[in-house]
Image 1 (cartoon, rainbow, N blue to C red):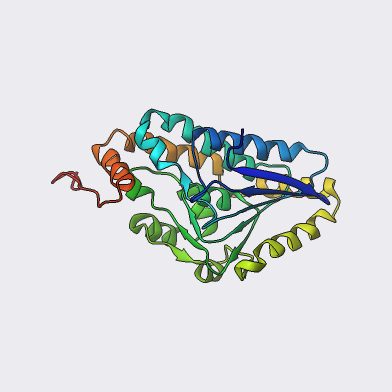
Image 2: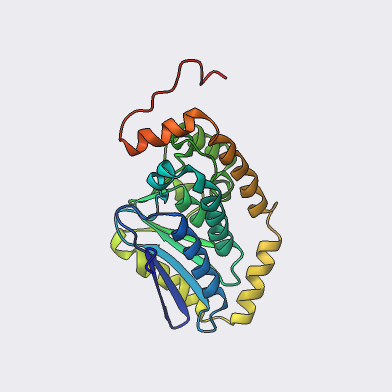
Length: 257
């Protein structure tokens, strides 16, 4: 079954391409399939480095809000799929390079924030519209990219930042024209693939071990608040408004609680 991505391996570089029109937003099954594939690549003897990029209008818009609006009970499984995917990137024994363009939202932030290296096209924008979608999550991975106060500004307002600002803040290795994005990612990947695989695997494990805190534990903490958010009437209204392409109508007094 095609879950919206495809993979090839050439000269030690595993290239995973997201391609789920119109906005690369993955449903429940898609997130679990993506996690399975990233985990598999980490054990493939032909792979020495992984590149994740996307086709279409943007890198990734996160979860399929339409699916969750119709089936809110799937939130537990979707949460698990997100968690597994981001962990598969962060804890992968191989270095993971993420090449982003257009919108990088929600789950797209999770993938980029879990990566080892991020390159971006000059059209890329990074955002976390979770509050406006009646959910939580993404803050832990966003905070791996950007400073704490910038993360809170983005989270509370839902306002995105562009690639130039992301580069200024130190999250992006390189900003290039959209037409050169794949080549930029593959150039870095080729440098890594030429190294000793044993040494690179040790380096990845070592660097993960010296990070402050535990990224996966932080994200699981956030996901508990996503489940709590789903018990709020405002959460359901936010998703319905998004699907129906209208402004959300919150009940008077609800926002003041």
